[in-house]
Image (cartoon, rainbow, N blue to C red):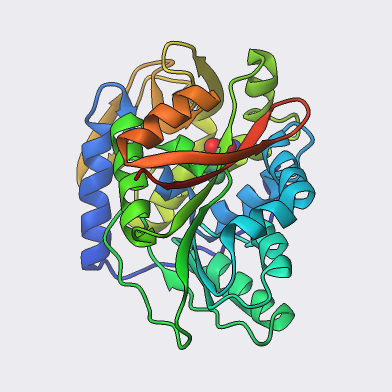
Length: 326
Ligand code: AVJ
C-alpha cells in the first residue's frame, strides 16, 4: 500500500520544546497497560492524506453515508441553522461535508474550520475561499481537545453553530466525550446549536471491515503513527514488526485500532527502552458506536438536548441537531 501514497520526506528536526512534550506524552502512553497512543498523533501530513484515502475505500461506509444524509436533508438542516450564523467546525479535514451546508447558507457570518493538520487546513481553506469568495473563512490550527483562541469575525453573527461531523466524537471515551460536548456548548453559547455526526451500532463484520479494508489503507494509516514517531522523535520502531488489527470491544461498544507486535522486541524512544511481548498491542484509537439513545444520554450529560435527527435507510449513521436544554 505504501507505494500508492506519496512519501513524506524524512526531515531531521532540531529537537524543540514541542518535541520534548510529545516525547513525554508518548512515553506516558506507552507505559500504560495496555499501551496507548493518542489518536491525534495519527494525523500528521501523511496520516491525514491516508485518512482521506480511507474515506474512499468501499468498506468505509461512514463518509459516503454521512455525505448522502447531508445531501438529502441539507435544506432541513440549513433551515435549523437559520440566517447569519457563524459556523465553527471541529476537525474540519478537507471540509467536504461542510460544502453542502455552505451551498445552502448564503448569508453565513463566517466559517471557522479548526483542525490539527496544517496541511489539511491550508488546502481546505484555499479551496473553500475559491468556491465561496464572499465568505469570511477564519482557519484555526489547533488540537481542539486543548484550549484554543477563537478569531473574531467581521460580521456580527446571529448565533454560533458548532459543526462536528465524521463521528470524530467516537474517538473519545465517555468522560472526555462529555467534556468535549460541554466545550462545544460553551463555544455555541446559550442560543447556539451543535450539529454532530455519529456512527451507529451495526453488524460486527461490517464494522470490522470498515476498519480493516482489503487494500490495506487503514493498516498503512495506523502503522504511520510509528513512522511518525521515528521521523519526529527519533524513535526506532520497525513498522514491519507490527501489524494492524481492528478489534470489536462489545462491552464498550467500540472498534479499537491496535498495532500488535509480531515479535518480542525492545524499541528506543527518548532515551528509554520500551519492551513488547509477542502479540502485545498498542491501542491507537477507540471508535465508539452509538445508538440514538446512548448518544442522547451522553449529550444530556453535557447539557444538550437532541432536537432533530436524520439517518440513512440502513440506519448506519446519523446526523443530529442539538440545542441547550432549557
Ligand atoms: C476520523 C475518527 C471518524 O473513527 O472512523 C478511520 C478515524 N480510523 N479509520 C473513525 C479512522 C480508522 C475515523 N474518525
